[in-house]
Image 1 (tube, rainbow, N blue to C red):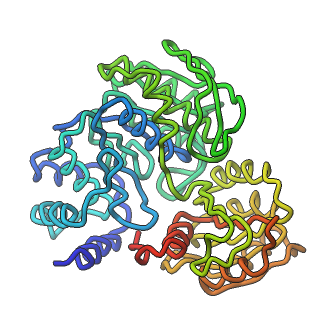
Image 2: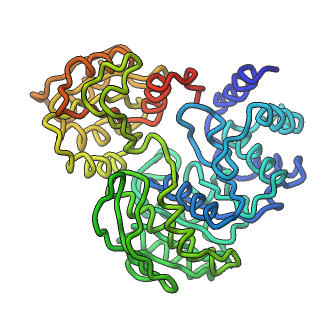
Length: 443
């Protein structure tokens, strides 16, 4: 099969939905001779920021001279983004080979889900490539997530808020218990912004399994010092490290929080047999790449005809927590007007995602990416009206992203700012459109 045919067959597994539990994953990996036993790993879970934290930790380790695997989801433009080694995506040829190897052992009477299949591909790739360390991002939850078959040297939980309530429960404490399921005896845990009942759940889990915890505000701290031309600059203080003026190559004040947690994880890894020098930490932070998160395009560089006179920012905020964090970045903008282009998945908290963003906007463009789960512009407007009632913000509906982007390019003045947000699918498709990359591969 061709690469495109292979992806079609792979994404067709999405029809099996989400399968909560590890039995199917365990059987699949056993049929592959348990590739996840062959490499050391760091396991990350959380609601927001885990992708940025994973990418930042991988960048620090790479700067320290290590070969680093990285498994994240979802992807923005190409499926190959999900599986990387030292910042290089898996090739199309290798993707085909991994697919065929996993497909050969599946039980057709009880087929794996899409995420189980892809996770098995990633573990098989890391077995073959033998990285010094692989950074594994959990997909949904933690305790019963398909990635929770590994035995990591340490784990991290970024933060926890309400998400995927149909699978994880509709209370913070319940969701926290699911996320805390990645904590294991003998694997130190690093926590991000964990507070209140969530923090209590995490501490109880640590005590129950006999794992050491390193918690933000108790065992490590950071202080925001300012902003570079790209992102935040901060000082870090942990049990063993004192580092000053660390600059992050990711925009948004909240990236200091994610980066500080990555440094805390690096400090932990340093104590577990992977020595790191301060220069590796600072270099890794300045070199990290994580597209689609407060990613900026200069005036005149978009859309494809380069007619946009205002700068453009893309951010994949797709839940209320992510939207609030991104809005804190937008609130610092000196733009005269913010033109907000949004596309949101119909199964998301539309008003929770949009409310923090539209409060800062002067013009709203409702649209949708070419994805089956995306809400129509009409549905977005109706759900907003039902939640907040009539609002005076000038609002226009566009059938697709290119038409919305072209409209914003013509209406935004040089002193304005154009923002695209609401979903990683929206941002991924926009990014492909702006950069001329191939059509976004299905997620």
